[in-house]
Amino acid sequence: MVGPVGDHRAEVVKVVSETFRLDPAEIEFDATLEELGVDSKGRIKLLSALEIYHDVRIDLDQLDRFTDIGSVAEVLAEALDGKADGSDERR
Image 1 (cartoon, rainbow, N blue to C red):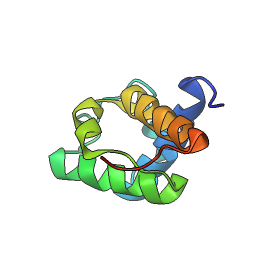
Image 2 (spheres, one colour):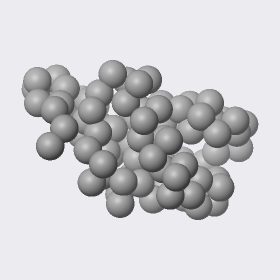
Image 3 (cartoon, helix red, strand yellow):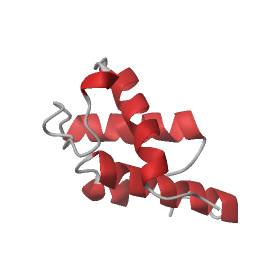
Image 4 (cartoon, rainbow, N blue to C red):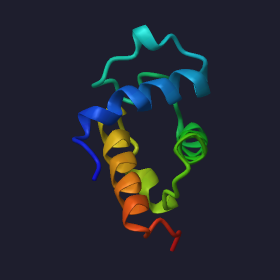
């Protein structure tokens, strides 16, 4: 079972900082992706990085939810929960 969303925010910050070469100390948990300079192409890049880093599948339809660190953590938590249930296939 996946823990609370808060448990995944630090993981999302790590992936964002590595993917976009940002200082993780300067990324707030409530930061929007726009504030971090992540545009629509960057959101696709982030989705791909999360899939690779966590060995999960995230449906492209979830990109609309990629608005801030917390919402990305929610999507990641759901993907990890789906993986644990054995239902991480793309639609």
